[in-house]
Amino acid sequence: MSAQPQTPKDPLYPDPHPTVSPQAKADLIKALEQALQADTVLHEEEDLRPYECDGLSAYRRLPLAVIIPHDLDQARQALAICRERGIPITARGAGTGLSGGALPFPNGVLMSLARFNEIIDLDPVKRLARVQPGVRNLAISEAAAPHGLYYAPDPSSQIACSIGGNVAENSGGVHCLKYGLTVHNVVAVKMLTIEGDLVTLGSEALDSPGYDLLALIHGSEGMLGIIVEVTVRLLPRPERAQVLMAAFDNPQVAGEAVAALIGQGIIPGGLEMMDNDAIRAAEDFVHAGYPVDAAAILLCELDGTDAEVSEQVHEVRELLLGAGATEVRTATDEAERMRFWAGRKAAFPAVGRISPDYYCMDGTIPRRQLGKVLGGIADLSKAYGLRVANVFHAGDGNLHPLILFDANQPGELEKAEELGGQILELCVEVGGTITGEHGVGIEKINQMCVQFQPAELTQFHAVKAAFDPQGLLNPGKAVPTLHRCAEFGAMHVHRGQLPFPDLPRF
Image (cartoon, rainbow, N blue to C red):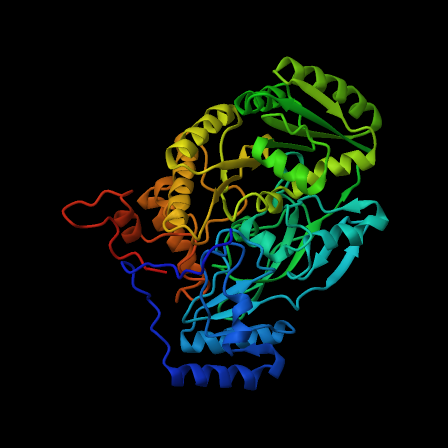
């Protein structure tokens, strides 16, 4: 989303970290520069501007400083300096996140892991790669390709997004239906705690003793520790992959076809859906060969052995036609398969060509509710007077409605955000969740109040406090305070008193 710069306004919830005086800032910068190399610390305004936001560019603010450590020791020293002074730290990967998870804290330091960009080891026998957090998602598959292997999770931003950010947000991608999210493809993570201790979560073995802290760190948005190394699982390239493209004259029928397909026990390698606005935008941009008169298309990729793909292609074709598809086309060769996927991968930037701004949402619903929710989104779109282009991972019900608006028109950004909130609440209403892979950040923090009860939020804060007692790691993200939920209107207040009034405000 591109819009005029704003600073998140939250006057009802005072910052628990005191404002840093000019002298204290100068002392902080001096301490960082003395402990780290000169090119590691940025503090002039023009140097800070590139770090003022992540992919949620409607909200921007400058940190006190940006540090770009060269190695583990520098990262540990920076943590120590900030911890001693009570200065918050926000970790940042490639900055492609779409929920404001890497939005800097105005009284804090932003730590970029961009220089942690080495593939430390790639073992084709064990089918594992040990990498630093700044390594790009796609670079892992590129390095594994000579061995006939690849890394399965493939977010649309895989050419740029980093593996550390993927862990922080538990990213998915077009092939996550069959091969899982980031959490299902990572076997171990090393991270620095706020105290500077290096801990290893998980192992190369099939299981490891103790609590499953490896799963906990996935999707934790930098609130529990600083990820410094990730060991990922590599998979062998399937013998054959083939894509079918099915056209529909009604998006709700396409949504129902998805449920019918999965209901038959078929698990495609990828199953994606795009509506007409997204189809037209992508076709104009990429020339993928999409039918621009279709109300919706499904892209269904089948992979495996040559024999099983041949059998499934016929079965899926008949099933989709029986479910209401007006046309089913099979990619005739690898070049056409790649064109079909290129259009889907480019859908987000393509939609940017038809609207001054767009707001990318991320919610997940039960597959059987796809038709109902698409109808609900259409009704909300009409009610708010804003077009919505739908692009999403249909197979696992992960929606990405793109709300089109013009930030130069007064009030349109606020209206787009309100519409987005209504869509997320619709997802919760039908038994879904407010995020599938983009994280909560600052974007969905109010909807967390709808998704979870006070006792659950209390436990989330307790987990945060166990890892980070001072609340210095990426404060104000992902988990709302109970006070915030009460003000949002999603929590009962009895006689002016909130439940659990002593909950810390991180």
